[in-house]
Amino acid sequence: MNAYAPTKNLKIIEAASLAIDSDIDLSAAVPAAVQAPISLPDLSSDVVQRDLLLPWQRRKIMQFIEEHLTETIKVEELAALTKLSKTYFSRVFKSAYKESPYNYVLRRRMELAKELITETDAALSEIALDCGMADQAHLCKTFRKVFGTTPNRWRRSSQGVQRPSGTRVPSATRQEANTARFN
Image (cartoon, rainbow, N blue to C red):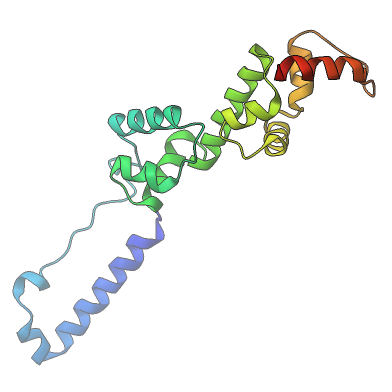
């Protein structure tokens, strides 16, 4: 919460009150209840809560993200699940999870990709689509940004197969692999 806003609002209220008091005609027209002193909470105290997501909101968000990880997930959808505005939802999500909703979903997708790369022999293009990425290039670029290595290097290191850099799989082996995959 912006510490400046309450001070600014209080000054505006005080100025309006002085203006009403100084104008006799206006002062008579304004009911006494409106002119009563306004007490604002002490915003410096620990009583004021920070932006929070309630447990039911957290559960709904996480369940939705996990169930729709391979699809496009919009902040508007997540905000609607929690019954919050898009802007407020983004703020409380970042406060709760220390990253934006977009970055959280992207990180979850990369964790899924890492798991699929490690545990399956699926082609990277298939893994990209399974993780909600546009294509293999998008997967490779994002994977490298998140984990500091390429998906192929990750796969080789996780399987204990280390080829010297610059060496290639013989074309006959690649052809056999492609033939086996499409038959």
